[in-house]
Image (cartoon, rainbow, N blue to C red):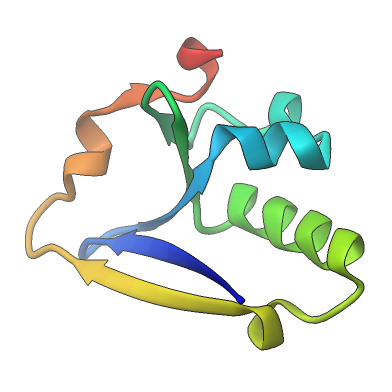
Length: 92
């Protein structure tokens, strides 16, 4: 079972995923500029990019996301530090 961290503030949320996983799923070039990144991780915005990842994950594993994943939520009052990271598009 895999574990992921979901970062959330009052306005939005992002799933932290290793960039290596995006490459393995073949979706690294499909992630939008609404997501953020560090050297090794992408923070996938919750609406489109997280959905893209979940669908690719399910296709690869052949099972539903909820049955294969533990998700930890880190909520921040105000703005999450994720918002200060570089845009995913600029981090490719």
